Image (cartoon, rainbow, N blue to C red; front, side, top):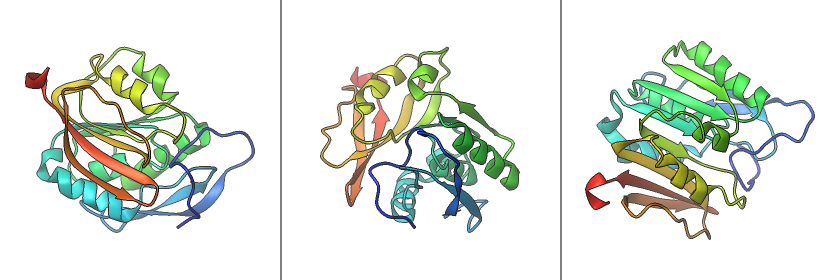
Length: 203
């Protein structure tokens, strides 16, 4: 869809954003629906192939679950989760224009079981926690954000056996809590994608 960039989402440095492409929902109730994506530095949806692999891993475990999409960007992961039966989703996105488009796309779909928080992800995680069953964590690359966010999630943001999807630059040796068990992993280009399952028994 776009030239390869180092991350799915970054903060805005200024200037207007404009519609650039389309996000295609690949499964569930909103299957084949296409939504606009802003032209923004570092902003791109997780590729269709990676999303399809991820949601095949998750399968029916999504049904009735609460999802958190941190560094939401296009909102592709959280919207796909809603499409496939998640009970609700919270999208956390720093950039106001990008967050506004997520809200617009949710309204277009009629998805009233979602909310968008325009806030820095670390500031959000420093707030009052609420446990989620599934967390999508795809921070900007080469910013050192993955490990601190993984640690912060353990402060009440995760259900006992939550799934955590972590997308990072391929060369990064991701540090996660010891009781997060690697469930599946794949890679595409410069990106590594890992799905962890939290195990309270392993603590």
